[in-house]
Image 1 (cartoon, one colour):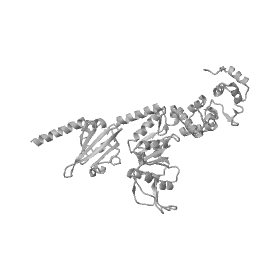
Image 2 (image 1 turned 60 degrees about the vertical axis):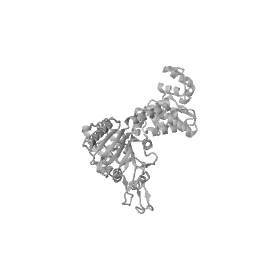
Image 3 (image 1 turned 120 degrees about the vertical axis):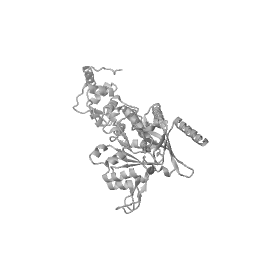
Image 4 (image 1 turned 90 degrees about the horizontal axis):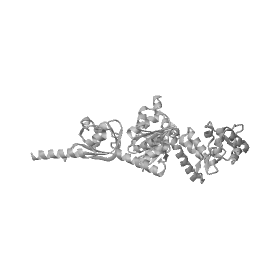
Length: 468
């Protein structure tokens, strides 16, 4: 009787203990069915105890179980063959569908004779900690006066969302698909994803899938054995093997052929590869980050891209906005590239004129950040002062402004209006601003007398002196 009372007291004590702790704790039987569920698990997952008792543990959809996504059952999981796993960072699936970052610990409970009683799992919610880390990162960026993550610059809300996605991806091993127009910085995002992950000490291997034919890409990715094809004079490991333990970045993933799509799907599903000309399977521990400037969803509907591969790649999508959708970042980018080019060229350019900046702000930027970077490099070649002006910018930018009169350089120090151009009030104001209201310089540029400039100013009611 005493032993029964003692066991009852012990059970009550354990129950009270589980209800009072802040971490989520639940137990499973040997078939993977949930047998207990503490209040913290209800808070973390959104599932009440009565909703999960006797349900399979895969209802939580953990992103990692022994390095793999949550399997369909306990036997596939492999936990019964091990005594414990963790602590490990992963994601679980909340009842409403969103992912919750957690630290997970698992222990198998055995009797003295070695038989298994069940399994206990403990889950620590990292949501608040991750939010604090993100806030600290944003505060640091503000204090430094520069909004940057892994070489990516931006203060717009669109880029804050990108930064948050990059940081969120660090808590997971799932595949990442980066989508955005050419020149938006997809490779920089891939580098940042790798640098923020647990794999940052290992290699990041980059492969441009559009630069190689199908056969060359297959050999590049998977490697080959001696004699596999003409020119294969020795065994060669592929990029997947080189990236073992790290991350592989597959750029322009939308360009790969159906055959390579099938082989890549096998890598994502089985985490193993076969070299060209060899039947031996080799395990690889890699994280795949892919990027494309194409609409993969549209390619799937057109039958040009496998839907199963598409959904495997886009487990965690990151969308990069075009520069025309994040104009708040243009001034930051301009100053950043001016600073870089000052270091590279030894020049001391301090700023950009107001008309030139207006051109930057109003331009559509079809080439995105890469085009802006090239525009600053172009300006550094032509600028012989300490301030970039409109005439230092590429012609296509100037031609894109319907209100601007285009100029042509006829030597390195003197410029004039294109012959036959008609001077109007708006153009004259632009010229006066560029020349700091120096009427003689304006006259020289347009090929008119200084008196003519005065007459035009009077005619169009333009003040003689620069407005304060």
